[in-house]
Length: 245
Image (cartoon, rainbow, N blue to C red; front, top):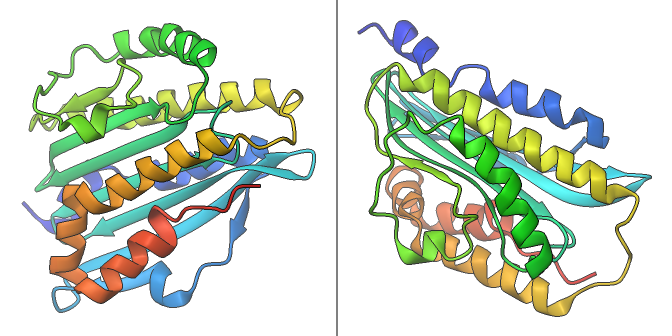
């Protein structure tokens, strides 16, 4: 399959669509060191691009979105994470997609709940269940590691389908779970209090540390882009932990 055709059939447009949907939260691009925002690997055959967006309302930052896209002639990986500044009140948006040769290989999409209060967890599950039903045509995989689903909503999309027709469904799932996150964030904007919850931040920090350490993506980044750079990228960008407000 020609590379141009393969690329069009992967997750084309998802990066820009995500950015457009987040504009309602006064998104602003955050500065990122050039060596972390752009990196080529495998002799230039794979290209990594990353960016960060500050999300908020009323002039106050409420979350940070971190997006990564790795692309080559036939391969594409897209990771999008949104980490709230108050994890006791808002979930983490997590979308991880892998496609190769015009076929999906792995997808995990969810609103994760490290630090979220019990009442908000129950409400989130109820609303996420409605979204999940729209994508029950995607065959679920049952081999997710325990660390990946410890704080899952229970309504996540986790699939290893390789059907090309599933690419559009996965793009739609990313955007509809994102839409739910945006709705939750906008509803909380007026009610978010300034007080910090150290226990919730600690739980989110543990979530970030475990994902940086255990995710299969870590080994892939090390293999393609080098260990020193990969570990800096993971700890200083993708899973960077913010200090407790």
